[in-house]
Image (spheres, rainbow, N blue to C red):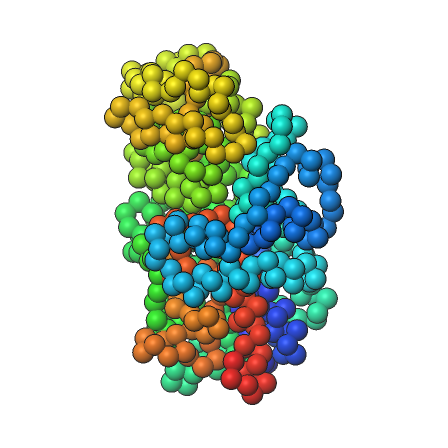
Length: 497
C-alpha cells in the first residue's frame, strides 16, 4: 500500500494539469497511467491541440504566444471572442442542454488557465496553418476567434511540455498502472486499486479521475451509442476503456450527460482501428466545407457549409457513420482543391477527368453522382464565384432540390480534374460521464458530493450534447483539472475541498 495526498488517475492534459495544481497547493501527488511510458498522454497526445478561450482579439493573444511569427500574424486577423459568444457557441452546439454553471466555469476560467499553463511551460501558437497553407492564399484570413489558439506542436507538443513540467516538479508517475477500482468507506473515497498480474496495489489519498471516456471500448460503444458504433475507428488512445467510469458508477456516482452521443469527426478511410502515434491527428479530413460530401449512393447528406468547420466537424463523423458502409467521399474540383488542409498530404486522393470516371474509381453509381452534381450546380448563383471567400463565412449559398442546402462556400463543381478523398467516422471521446459540480466534486445518486472523489476531462459528463465546439474539450479538462487538483490538495490538508 502507498499513502499520498492526491492520486490522479490518467496522464492526459486534464490529469497532468490536476497533478500540477495539487502540487502547487503543497500536496504530495502520484499519477497513475494505464499506458507504458511510450504510449503515455491519453487522447490529448492525439489532439490538434486547440484550446477554445475567451479573449479580446489578436493583441490580447500575443502575450500568450511563445514566439511571434510576424509572417503568420500579417496573414490573419482575429476578432474578439467574448464570454457571451463563447457560452453561446457552447450552448448552441449542445442544444442548450449543459448546466449553465458548468459552462460558465470553463468560459470564465479559460484564458486565465492558458496563462497559468504558459507559466508551467506550455507554449502557444495561432492555428493559422491548421486549415490552410497560408502561402497559397491571398489577402488576410479571418481566423475563427474561438479556434485561434493551440498548443505549439499540437497534442504532441502539449503533452511533451506538460510531462516536462510534472517531471520538474518531482511528481511521481506510475506507468503500466491501470486503475481498476475505488477504495471506499460508504460514499467516501479513500484511494484507488491498481490491477497487477497477481493482485491489486492500493494507493490511498484524495482521488482525481481523469481517465477518459469509453470510446476505445467497442462493447460499451455498442451498448450506449447504438448499432454500428462498435465498428468505427478510434482516433485516440486504446486505453480509454471506461473502466474507472464504470467503477465510479458502481461506487454510487451519478451518471450525467449524453450517453448516446460522442465527438466523431471525418477521418481518412484508411485510418487504423485505433490511433497511431506516428500519425496523431494527421488523418483528419476537415476541408469538406469546400467540397461536396457524397455517400456510397452518390448523394449529398449534410450541409457542408453550415458554419465554420470548428462548429460542425464533431457531428459530421456521426453523419458519415450512418451512411451505407460508414464511408463517404469529399469531392473537390480545381476551384477549391488548393484550399485543402496541409494534413491532406498524408492521404491518397482519387483523381479523374470526368465525374463518370471518378464514380467508377470510387465505386459510386455514375448516374446518381452526375445527377447530384448537376442538380447542385444549377442551384448555385451565377455570381457565386465572384462572391466566394474561403477565409470567412461568405453567405454564398445554394438550395438544390431534393438535397440539403449549402449555407456557405457554394461553388459549382465543374472544373476537372476532380479530386476525391474517401472518409469514415472516427470517434474522439464520449459525452456521457460522471456528474460533477463546479468544484469538480463527483456527485452521487442522492445529489451529494462524494468526499474524496473529483473528476475532470472526458470522464465528466453533462458538458456536451449532440455536437461540440473545437477546443472546448481540452480547455474543459484544464480548467476543471486545476479546480480538482486544488480541491483534492485542500482536502488532503484537512480542508473542506
